Length: 200
Image (cartoon, rainbow, N blue to C red):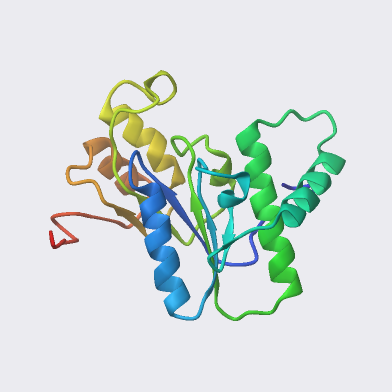
């Protein structure tokens, strides 16, 4: 990312982590921003039908040509640095966002980036978001993230940033998430004390 000058991103970014509901949250936010005239980059994983689903640009999947150009640029600078499939994908998404922003001068642009696994060690966590969202916290990938909701919450809290707002959609967020936000000076909003919902 440093060699390709991918950071900071040329537009505000929102990181979306959590156990369930990440893709739905990204898609809902995407539609909200599009309706307000924003240019929207939306990255999700995993994909269902084809690789191009990993990045939508204004609701349309990025082309093979864009991804191939990104892969070529990454391969040209990575040298002997090993990259996982997901790391390669993240770099490609960031490269495409940078390229399109450089070629077009839009006033209102946002990147919605879905965390693939956990949060703290996820490749997208190199991005400095204006907002972080944790949709829910449950037992998943326990061999990597921990065997309790409290431990997993700390891993997912890794996408939070000091003095940057965060939202948690969990109905009962573990105390470790709330403690992390407090000690790291993260203004965290979550259900019951701050947010309400309507079950329609």
